[in-house]
Image 1 (cartoon, rainbow, N blue to C red):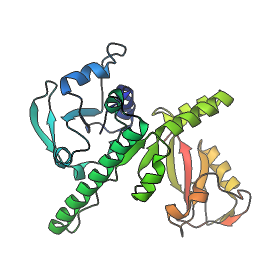
Image 2: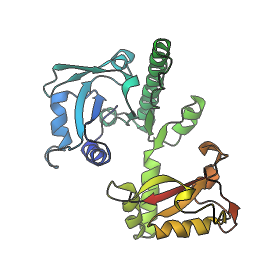
Image 3: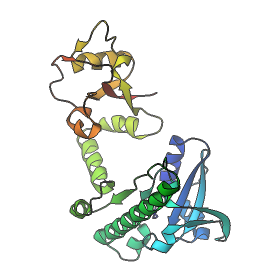
Length: 276
């Protein structure tokens, strides 16, 4: 949901991550005939060509329930092409801070309010669709949790009140990246490695990938990290088998007491950066 100036860059990056045949539904108030020109940034960028993604355009208002209940795709001329989808059918939903609203004079707080409204409406629609499907099929799975882009840090308190956990503080992330690069330009190499499709990705590995527990069960995290490095992976943390991920946040990234030996179990997980 939403539109922003760098939409073409986002789509190009996403195209490198997803499987062939994936679909990207763009739902916003920008007329379909105008989108192709906006994706080229009025001639400053080349025409967007995707290899894995098929783009489906939907025109509507992200804060109006009737537009969100059922989405109808249109062709490049804006005419309905017969395809439609509901919010419980998506694998992921991302709500962007709407650049169109900002161009019309909205400030960051206003944009965040629109994003939060969309988030709450989408969650409510998904909940009702799930209840309906559950009554028809006891094995129905929960719909995906929508993620919303938030611009102003002051909005974070509103998210807590609304019990919304799916959000990204985009301006804060960009500021942090710029601050790190300004202090040490070499950090840009690391960031490019972990934040682009061509670089390393995050993996959750079983500890048995690095340790033969029949021979050596008591090791420190540094020992695990060394064995991961021998496999050309970087171990950044671990999750004990007895803890859920939400209860192991202090261990998943940069755990304390890395030098202290612990007894590892077969279901312990190691979080690493690796190429594959």
